[in-house]
Image (cartoon, rainbow, N blue to C red; front, side, top):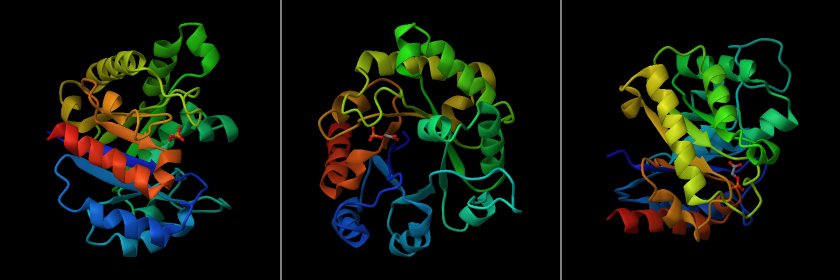
Length: 252
Ligand code: PGA
Protein backbone atom coordinates (compact mmCIF):
# COMPACT_ATOMS: atom_id res chain seq x y z
CA UNK A 1 0.00 0.00 0.00
CA UNK A 2 1.26 3.49 -0.87
CA UNK A 3 1.66 5.78 2.07
CA UNK A 4 -1.00 8.49 2.41
CA UNK A 5 0.24 11.85 1.21
CA UNK A 6 -0.07 14.85 3.52
CA UNK A 7 1.15 17.79 1.47
CA UNK A 8 1.37 21.22 3.06
CA UNK A 9 0.62 24.11 0.71
CA UNK A 10 1.90 27.18 2.52
CA UNK A 11 0.87 29.49 -0.34
CA UNK A 12 2.35 32.99 0.20
CA UNK A 13 2.59 32.40 3.96
CA UNK A 14 5.08 31.15 6.45
CA UNK A 15 4.09 29.31 9.65
CA UNK A 16 2.99 31.69 12.40
CA UNK A 17 6.03 31.17 14.63
CA UNK A 18 8.48 30.92 11.75
CA UNK A 19 10.04 28.14 9.73
CA UNK A 20 12.64 27.11 12.33
CA UNK A 21 10.00 26.65 15.01
CA UNK A 22 7.79 24.75 12.58
CA UNK A 23 10.53 22.33 11.59
CA UNK A 24 11.74 21.86 15.15
CA UNK A 25 8.19 20.87 16.12
CA UNK A 26 7.50 18.73 13.12
CA UNK A 27 10.66 16.85 12.09
CA UNK A 28 11.02 14.80 15.32
CA UNK A 29 7.42 13.63 14.90
CA UNK A 30 8.07 12.44 11.36
CA UNK A 31 10.49 9.64 12.12
CA UNK A 32 9.29 6.07 11.55
CA UNK A 33 6.05 7.04 9.85
CA UNK A 34 4.63 3.84 8.46
CA UNK A 35 1.55 5.03 6.68
CA UNK A 36 2.09 8.71 5.89
CA UNK A 37 4.29 10.46 3.38
CA UNK A 38 4.52 14.13 4.43
CA UNK A 39 5.49 16.96 2.09
CA UNK A 40 5.87 20.74 2.25
CA UNK A 41 5.40 23.27 -0.57
CA UNK A 42 6.75 26.58 0.78
CA UNK A 43 7.13 29.91 -1.06
CA UNK A 44 10.03 29.69 -3.56
CA UNK A 45 12.37 31.79 -1.43
CA UNK A 46 12.47 29.15 1.30
CA UNK A 47 13.02 26.13 -0.92
CA UNK A 48 16.85 26.00 -0.67
CA UNK A 49 16.69 26.57 3.10
CA UNK A 50 14.13 23.80 3.57
CA UNK A 51 16.15 21.56 1.29
CA UNK A 52 19.06 21.81 3.75
CA UNK A 53 16.90 21.53 6.84
CA UNK A 54 14.82 18.59 5.59
CA UNK A 55 17.86 16.61 4.53
CA UNK A 56 17.68 13.15 6.11
CA UNK A 57 14.06 13.69 7.09
CA UNK A 58 11.23 11.81 5.44
CA UNK A 59 9.50 15.03 4.35
CA UNK A 60 9.26 15.71 0.61
CA UNK A 61 9.81 19.19 -0.74
CA UNK A 62 7.65 20.75 -3.42
CA UNK A 63 7.05 24.00 -5.28
CA UNK A 64 3.72 25.73 -5.78
CA UNK A 65 4.07 26.44 -9.50
CA UNK A 66 6.56 26.48 -12.37
CA UNK A 67 6.96 27.90 -15.88
CA UNK A 68 6.72 25.50 -18.79
CA UNK A 69 9.82 26.84 -20.59
CA UNK A 70 13.23 25.58 -19.50
CA UNK A 71 14.75 29.08 -19.32
CA UNK A 72 14.50 32.48 -20.96
CA UNK A 73 13.17 36.01 -20.54
CA UNK A 74 10.25 35.30 -18.20
CA UNK A 75 10.60 37.83 -15.42
CA UNK A 76 9.26 36.57 -12.12
CA UNK A 77 8.91 32.96 -13.24
CA UNK A 78 10.76 29.79 -12.22
CA UNK A 79 11.72 26.77 -14.31
CA UNK A 80 11.48 23.04 -13.69
CA UNK A 81 15.21 22.87 -14.32
CA UNK A 82 15.88 25.13 -11.31
CA UNK A 83 13.31 23.44 -9.12
CA UNK A 84 14.41 19.87 -9.69
CA UNK A 85 17.68 20.53 -7.85
CA UNK A 86 15.67 20.84 -4.66
CA UNK A 87 12.14 19.54 -5.14
CA UNK A 88 10.42 16.29 -5.99
CA UNK A 89 6.89 17.69 -6.20
CA UNK A 90 5.24 20.64 -7.91
CA UNK A 91 1.67 21.90 -7.56
CA UNK A 92 0.20 22.79 -10.95
CA UNK A 93 -3.09 24.49 -11.76
CA UNK A 94 -4.07 25.39 -8.22
CA UNK A 95 -7.42 27.19 -8.31
CA UNK A 96 -5.77 30.38 -7.05
CA UNK A 97 -3.49 30.29 -10.11
CA UNK A 98 -6.41 29.53 -12.40
CA UNK A 99 -8.66 32.27 -11.06
CA UNK A 100 -6.40 35.01 -9.72
CA UNK A 101 -3.70 34.64 -12.38
CA UNK A 102 -5.93 33.45 -15.24
CA UNK A 103 -4.02 30.26 -15.94
CA UNK A 104 -5.71 28.24 -18.64
CA UNK A 105 -6.01 24.46 -19.00
CA UNK A 106 -3.76 24.77 -22.07
CA UNK A 107 -0.97 26.44 -20.04
CA UNK A 108 -1.48 23.90 -17.29
CA UNK A 109 -1.03 21.05 -19.79
CA UNK A 110 2.34 22.54 -20.85
CA UNK A 111 3.41 22.79 -17.22
CA UNK A 112 2.45 19.17 -16.58
CA UNK A 113 4.45 18.12 -19.61
CA UNK A 114 7.50 20.10 -18.48
CA UNK A 115 7.35 18.81 -14.89
CA UNK A 116 7.13 15.26 -16.20
CA UNK A 117 10.23 15.73 -18.37
CA UNK A 118 12.12 16.71 -15.27
CA UNK A 119 12.25 14.81 -12.05
CA UNK A 120 9.18 16.49 -10.60
CA UNK A 121 5.92 14.75 -9.72
CA UNK A 122 3.06 17.06 -10.71
CA UNK A 123 0.18 17.62 -8.31
CA UNK A 124 -2.52 18.64 -10.75
CA UNK A 125 -5.33 20.53 -8.98
CA UNK A 126 -8.85 20.30 -10.33
CA UNK A 127 -12.20 21.39 -8.94
CA UNK A 128 -15.44 23.19 -9.66
CA UNK A 129 -16.64 26.56 -8.38
CA UNK A 130 -19.85 27.09 -6.41
CA UNK A 131 -21.99 28.03 -9.44
CA UNK A 132 -20.82 24.98 -11.34
CA UNK A 133 -21.61 22.86 -8.31
CA UNK A 134 -25.10 24.34 -7.96
CA UNK A 135 -25.70 23.57 -11.64
CA UNK A 136 -24.61 19.94 -11.17
CA UNK A 137 -21.61 20.48 -13.40
CA UNK A 138 -18.91 19.28 -10.97
CA UNK A 139 -18.11 16.01 -12.76
CA UNK A 140 -18.17 17.66 -16.17
CA UNK A 141 -15.82 20.47 -15.11
CA UNK A 142 -13.36 18.18 -13.35
CA UNK A 143 -13.34 15.75 -16.29
CA UNK A 144 -12.67 18.54 -18.74
CA UNK A 145 -9.85 19.97 -16.57
CA UNK A 146 -8.29 16.51 -16.44
CA UNK A 147 -8.62 15.80 -20.16
CA UNK A 148 -7.09 19.12 -21.24
CA UNK A 149 -4.58 19.37 -18.41
CA UNK A 150 -3.21 15.91 -19.17
CA UNK A 151 -3.51 16.12 -22.96
CA UNK A 152 0.27 16.20 -23.45
CA UNK A 153 0.99 13.18 -21.26
CA UNK A 154 0.98 9.69 -22.77
CA UNK A 155 1.88 7.67 -19.70
CA UNK A 156 2.71 9.29 -16.38
CA UNK A 157 5.57 7.85 -14.38
CA UNK A 158 3.99 9.38 -11.35
CA UNK A 159 1.12 11.83 -11.08
CA UNK A 160 -0.96 13.20 -8.22
CA UNK A 161 -4.42 14.61 -8.84
CA UNK A 162 -5.77 16.90 -6.11
CA UNK A 163 -9.54 17.34 -6.09
CA UNK A 164 -9.98 20.81 -4.61
CA UNK A 165 -13.48 22.30 -4.96
CA UNK A 166 -13.10 26.09 -4.96
CA UNK A 167 -15.91 26.64 -2.51
CA UNK A 168 -14.18 24.47 0.09
CA UNK A 169 -10.73 26.06 -0.12
CA UNK A 170 -10.03 28.37 2.81
CA UNK A 171 -13.72 28.36 3.79
CA UNK A 172 -13.49 26.19 6.88
CA UNK A 173 -16.09 23.90 5.29
CA UNK A 174 -14.62 20.86 3.61
CA UNK A 175 -16.63 19.01 0.98
CA UNK A 176 -18.71 16.19 2.45
CA UNK A 177 -17.29 12.67 2.36
CA UNK A 178 -20.07 11.76 -0.11
CA UNK A 179 -19.07 14.56 -2.49
CA UNK A 180 -15.40 13.69 -2.23
CA UNK A 181 -16.01 9.98 -2.75
CA UNK A 182 -18.07 10.66 -5.84
CA UNK A 183 -15.40 12.87 -7.37
CA UNK A 184 -12.60 10.45 -6.55
CA UNK A 185 -14.58 7.85 -8.53
CA UNK A 186 -14.98 10.25 -11.45
CA UNK A 187 -11.25 11.06 -11.45
CA UNK A 188 -10.27 7.38 -11.17
CA UNK A 189 -12.52 6.53 -14.11
CA UNK A 190 -10.98 9.28 -16.27
CA UNK A 191 -7.51 8.00 -15.36
CA UNK A 192 -8.50 4.43 -16.27
CA UNK A 193 -9.86 5.55 -19.62
CA UNK A 194 -6.86 7.71 -20.36
CA UNK A 195 -3.93 5.73 -18.97
CA UNK A 196 -5.36 2.21 -18.53
CA UNK A 197 -5.16 -0.08 -15.49
CA UNK A 198 -1.54 0.95 -14.99
CA UNK A 199 -2.91 4.28 -13.69
CA UNK A 200 -3.91 2.52 -10.48
CA UNK A 201 -0.21 2.30 -9.68
CA UNK A 202 0.98 5.58 -11.13
CA UNK A 203 -1.78 8.06 -10.29
CA UNK A 204 -2.65 9.02 -6.73
CA UNK A 205 -5.81 10.97 -5.95
CA UNK A 206 -5.89 13.33 -2.99
CA UNK A 207 -8.36 15.88 -1.58
CA UNK A 208 -7.82 19.52 -0.62
CA UNK A 209 -10.12 22.21 0.81
CA UNK A 210 -10.33 23.03 4.54
CA UNK A 211 -8.69 19.79 5.66
CA UNK A 212 -8.05 19.91 9.41
CA UNK A 213 -7.28 17.69 12.37
CA UNK A 214 -11.05 17.51 12.96
CA UNK A 215 -12.11 16.18 9.57
CA UNK A 216 -9.04 14.19 8.48
CA UNK A 217 -10.37 10.86 9.76
CA UNK A 218 -13.54 11.00 7.67
CA UNK A 219 -11.65 12.09 4.57
CA UNK A 220 -8.70 9.74 4.69
CA UNK A 221 -10.82 6.66 5.34
CA UNK A 222 -12.79 7.12 2.10
CA UNK A 223 -12.23 4.38 -0.46
CA UNK A 224 -9.30 5.00 -2.84
CA UNK A 225 -8.26 8.18 -1.03
CA UNK A 226 -4.51 8.59 -1.31
CA UNK A 227 -3.99 11.69 0.80
CA UNK A 228 -4.64 15.38 1.35
CA UNK A 229 -3.39 18.79 0.30
CA UNK A 230 -3.53 21.09 3.32
CA UNK A 231 -3.46 24.90 3.27
CA UNK A 232 -4.29 26.84 6.43
CA UNK A 233 -3.98 23.92 8.84
CA UNK A 234 -0.47 23.17 7.59
CA UNK A 235 0.85 26.49 8.89
CA UNK A 236 0.33 25.33 12.45
CA UNK A 237 2.84 22.63 13.41
CA UNK A 238 0.47 21.18 15.99
CA UNK A 239 -2.33 20.73 13.48
CA UNK A 240 0.01 19.40 10.84
CA UNK A 241 1.41 16.88 13.32
CA UNK A 242 -2.08 15.92 14.48
CA UNK A 243 -3.31 15.33 10.94
CA UNK A 244 -0.38 13.00 10.37
CA UNK A 245 -0.73 11.27 13.74
CA UNK A 246 -4.45 10.71 13.13
CA UNK A 247 -3.73 8.96 9.85
CA UNK A 248 -0.99 6.82 11.40
CA UNK A 249 -3.39 5.75 14.17
CA UNK A 250 -6.29 4.93 11.85
CA UNK A 251 -4.19 2.98 9.40
CA UNK A 252 -2.43 0.99 12.11
P1 PGA B 1 -7.08 25.18 2.70
O1 PGA B 1 -6.26 25.26 1.31
O2 PGA B 1 -6.67 23.90 3.36
O3 PGA B 1 -6.69 26.39 3.46
O4 PGA B 1 -8.53 25.16 2.33
C1 PGA B 1 -6.05 24.12 0.54
C2 PGA B 1 -5.41 24.50 -0.76
O5 PGA B 1 -5.71 25.56 -1.31
O6 PGA B 1 -4.57 23.75 -1.28
